[in-house]
Image (cartoon, rainbow, N blue to C red):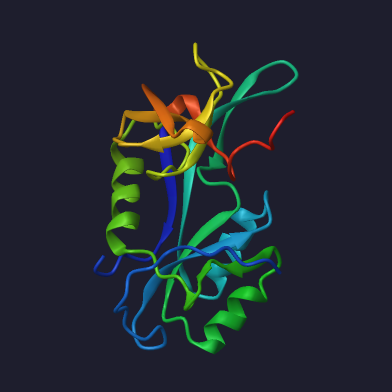
Length: 203
C-alpha cells in the first residue's frame, strides 16, 4: 500500500545535479512551480516538517512497507525516493535561502539555466498513483542511448547500449567497434542498470 505526505493543493497542476529542461519556462520569480529539494538521507520527514512550519507547500511521497523488529513485524512509512522532497513555491531568492536554511536541506536540483522546474503533470501523476495503487515497483531511470549493464537473468554481466526503449522492454545493442558490427537482444528494463560508459579496456 502507498501513501503520501502532501501539504497544500497542487495548483495547475554543495554538489549540483543537472537535468534537462524545456525551453520557454516563465521566470522562476514570477510563477509558482514544483522543484526537487535534495536532502540528507533519513532527513526527509524532518525537512518536510520544517517546510510545513514555514508554510511552504511540499510533497513527500511515502511508501508503506514492513520492518522487522526483534519479536515482530511493523508497518512503517519510508520515502519513495530517498533523499528528495518536492516543493511548490515561487522560488525567489528569499524563499530559496529559507529552504536551504532548513537543517538537512542540501540543494535544489538545477539545470544549466538554474533551478529546474518539474512539470505539473509529473507530480500529479505520481500523486494519483500513490492514492490509487496497492503496490508500486521502482525502475531505473533509463533513456535510449544509455550505456547499461545487465544485472540479472541469462544475460547478466553483458554491457551494451540501450535502444528502442518502451515501458516494459528494451533492446540491448552489443557492439564490436573495431569491425563495426553489432547484435541486439530484447530484455526487461528491470534487469538492467545504467552505467557511465563502456568498461575499461581489458588486455
